[in-house]
Length: 323
Image (cartoon, rainbow, N blue to C red; front, top):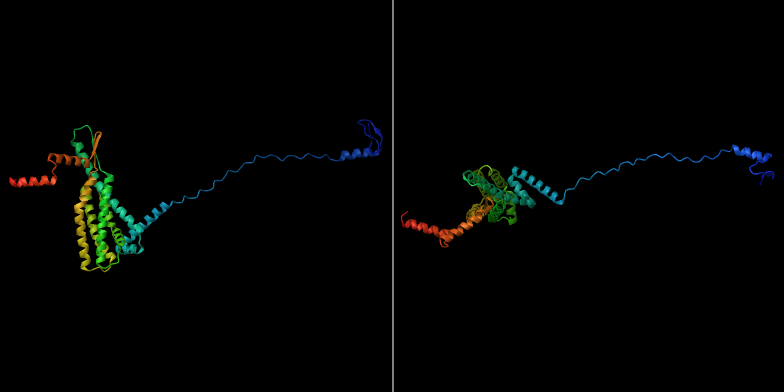
């Protein structure tokens, strides 16, 4: 049982009071709009924009690459100034104490002589192989290869010793003029003034693939140019060096260098040639090893006598018997 909240009349379950207040309240309730439940916003598929990759920064060259580029640029600048005015280029380089250019020119000349020797030996080996295979009836092909390492090693030694001797000659000739040129300055002047010598050696290497005689001719021209440009180095480092004493000292020194070269450089050349390798089938031997074994067999055949002693005995016998 429930009661009307307005008039207090007892009402049955589910019944509504008929008093005016209850009826007014019922009508007012019907006019009040019911609250609308909030609608969910429409769901849209959100597309995530592609991730942008930041542009890659250009790779910075390493310190070694920067030094190599600077060295090449400096060498190129020096060569341009040298071909414009050799004397001015050498003097400016000495004033700046530009060791990098001098070092590069020295290394290039050393390698150029080694490559020229290798080229000549390679051409000789190719000629020998062609001749052997043309007239040989053996089934095993003969291979003769030139030694790159020995050529660079002993050719480089020849170049270093020759350059050192001429540097000493330039230094002594400059001191004869009471110049303040140091030994390091003499090296810079000789190295920086040896551009033509280096070019001739590089041409000798290239020509060695064509003709041995042309390659040897350019090597001799390179030796001659080193003598001439050594004298010019004295003149460049000692302006006004017109005294006969300076030239006399230089050419005497050059004569000593030529004598030393004649005595010792053939030995180094033979050592370079001793690395020539001959292969027949599966067996191989270097020319140096073959020459050593031949020399031992020769000495054993003549009771240990040297070649000079045997040659002298042969001359004496020829003169004794009237040959």
